[in-house]
Image (tube, rainbow, N blue to C red):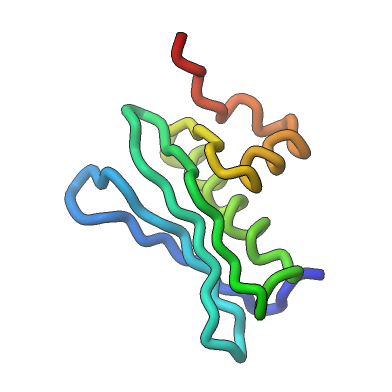
Length: 106
């Protein structure tokens, strides 16, 4: 089930080239916010946490947050390190995103 009217916003940290930030998803009719946080590492963003309160869970909020991250990666040209287990699972479900995976350090 997806939420009609779900609003996803981007919140980069301070500075011209932020070192961290988050995506937020607001479910209409509630005060609860879903979040996907990230940290910068070179030209990659480490997706470290996806947090969706149980009150708004099961409605596609986390998936919407990941899709916003993917859209920005395609538009802005960064890669993604899926440190968060949910983001990692989404990458396994969407092999068409594999070009956005950051190379693993050797």
